[in-house]
Length: 482
Image 1 (cartoon, rainbow, N blue to C red):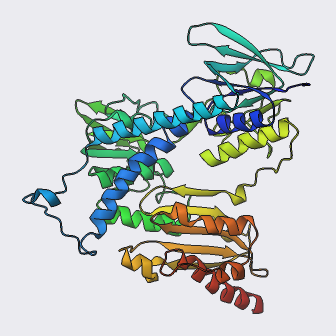
Image 2 (spheres, rainbow, N blue to C red; image 1 turned 90 degrees about the horizontal axis):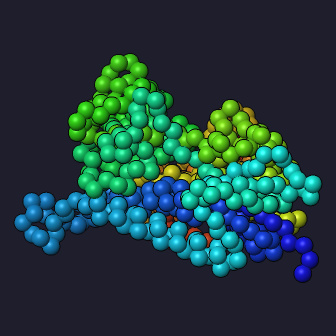
Image 3 (cartoon, rainbow, N blue to C red; image 1 turned 120 degrees about the horizontal axis):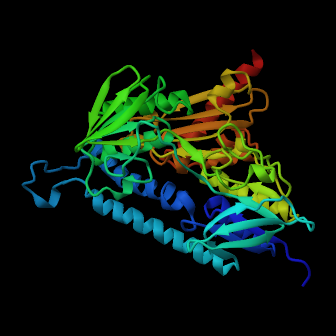
């Protein structure tokens, strides 16, 4: 048959298992080294579990915020058992979360093994000594039984992900002080939850537990929630959070968290102390790159321990690639998967298109959701991209009115001369579904005229995207004439 390239992938998350499938399809001999189960944190402790939990919260929020307007009657006193809303059984919810995560991991494992990939249980690391005479590299696998296995690889992909960052004075105990990987062991809903960190993870969990019935305090070290997102979108979400009763503490940095019996005390940098029954620490993540022999093998890391890669996932060491959260390029499962696929296309000599982050669609799974793609308001403000902007509130959309949706908007960015769509933001329920046509427009360099002329269903929330494009057409003409 000829020469078959040997690929070893360290890490079985989206970057790893998607790369394995591509490499196997291209005829390589593929081994995946994984310690926790295929799917990685995305499937086992992060994306799949959190979005499953959020799905329950979403039902609660949608019902609670619009049942009266939609004419639904609820017996709050509990005299009519047929219409009684009791609340959430968090233990049951979390058991469902774990069940779905394990099932998804099992499905991925089946898919990978059916493709002919070998899966080894253990922790992988690069062997010392660099490349061998034949250009291959050694990968050492520390097995669960303590034995060490040596593999030779013509190309290695590092896709080891990241783990929650912990503050020295706020060590998680898995019961009262928690990371986002530990919340699924809770059997009862936290009565008073303090969420430290207002990035994507903190905002998602704060909103979810508020909807499930917890009294939530969100501690943000910045002047607003979601500091990395569109400012208008963050403002809408923070307003919704406060309106629903959440205590949002801006410009408040947590210094420590300690458990006192069945209570938790969080001390802020100004000396103020906040009390609750539980505390969720969502203060970022740390790449899983330590003790892997990376620097000894010539793989450069940045100051945060992330692996430096180029747009085809190459590291500084020949034959070594990296993908996913361990690179810090864009902390999304979709980007990790694309990085892994690109790495294999490049390593195996197939046609490859370098990673283009300006076509990546991302979503914050709060209520309402915040979906974005392409260039941002910050890019326009700093002069990185010259664009005309239109923001269309959803309160004027007929379908939104029917569904009782009061918050949210569609925002589009286009070039003033050509009218090419270069970015967009959607703040709405299921924004993750509504962003796709805008992502297609950005990826295919469609103009606002093309987006506006495509038929939309009436009534539909997506009709606001077409209307925003029509208004952009007018603004673009005005900008070109001025």
